[in-house]
Length: 335
Image 1: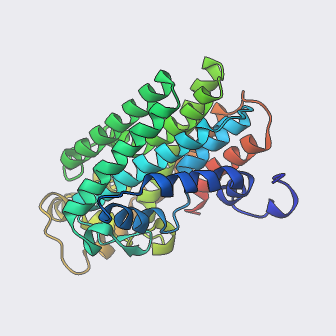
Image 2: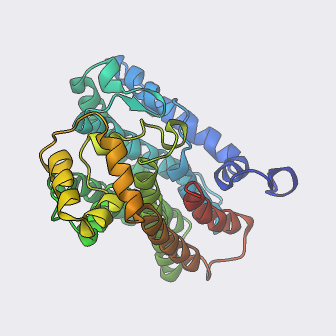
């Protein structure tokens, strides 16, 4: 694809998919091959349910785009892209068990269709597969980056267990949580693309900074959409975060400005988990009263600006332009 003409009107991630179509076909074939299991047919059944559910494959595309933008001509970037997708899928399988979720990408979750044991164990299998793939590149630096990201993701999820339902959680802790659970894999995805391409340290750092900022903006927007986005856009049920008592950025901002009556409401529904009919609507009304949604969106926009700035010194390339536009598009989902 030449990235021009007929692809201009498409969303940035769709233009990326067009440009990287050949690479993505190889990545998808690799994913199908490596998620196979001769002895445990439950593994490909569960994995295929999630992997083939129509996700955007954004994270593996970031790896491919970073490598291709820097002129990489080999195939190890495809293995790394598959690695990133396996890590992401493994975390989704585990998250749905932890959150007791029933829908993912508009479909019933694996733990609902099978059981929690299957979801956890298949997630473990995918983590193992991801490490096999990354080792095949022969790069110790790549292994270090992705191993650290995997540990950071798990750490972020554990931190969220204690922080999510505690009204003392502030924006700094929230940022630490989402940098772990979401941004760590975005930044690792872009960073390893630069490493495998043999880019200078300054370029690799810029790619890391881009992925980190993009991932933070992406998660803030997801948290905003939970209080008013369509199910099709967010890939889960609207209000899931509220029902799961997650203290996300819009709620943290509203709690910080809460009246005594409002604070008592947040204590009841978030800390105590005593939720009743009409509580979600009341929560949304409080968020609106304190302008919490638009303030959270402003923060997402600030992270978008940081993502764009990180790419300023990278080589001029159509893929760089798509990555710049992608950062803007992430926040455009909440107009």
